[in-house]
Image (cartoon, rainbow, N blue to C red):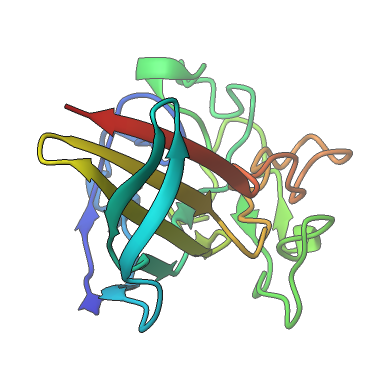
Length: 218
C-alpha cells in the first residue's frame, strides 16, 4: 500500500494542468499530473495442491514417461485512485497568448463544488460548476482540482511444466489480464466551453485479454 502526494506548479508543458499566469506561479500550484493518492498492489504465487507426479504422454516413439509439476498460479491485483483533472478553456480568453501546448491554456471560474455523489462516464463531475471568466481575465479555477476515474485490475496466470527428458521440457501458460473485465475509464473531457463533450468520458484502458502459450525448452 502506498499513500503519496505530489504537488508542483508544472508537471509537463503539454497536456492538462499547465501554467495559466506566469506572473502568478502559486496560482498554478496543485497536485502533479501523475499524482495518485492511494495505491494497493497485492501479488501471490503458489502451487495448486494437485496434479503432480508421473504421466505417460503419447509421442511419435510411443508412450513417454514424463514428470509433471504442480499447476502454478500467479495473481497480481492492482487498485489505485485516479489522476487529477484540470478544467481548461480551449481558447485564449485572457488574451495573453494561452493558445495551448507550451503556451498553456486559460482556466474558467469555479461557481460551486463540482463533485458528484455517483459520477459516471456520461457525467464525471458537475459541469454547471464552471463558467468562462469575463473576457481578458484569468479564471479562478485551480490546477488539477478534480480527480479522475480510479483503477482496478486483476491479472492471473496459470502455468505447468512437463519434463519430457533430462534436457527437454514443455511448459504451458494461460494468462488473463483484467480478468473481471472492469471498465477502467480514462480522464474525462475537461474543456469547459465544449458543452457536448465537457465532463464526459470517451475512452478506457484495455479490456479483458486472455492468451495461451506453449514453450519447448531444450
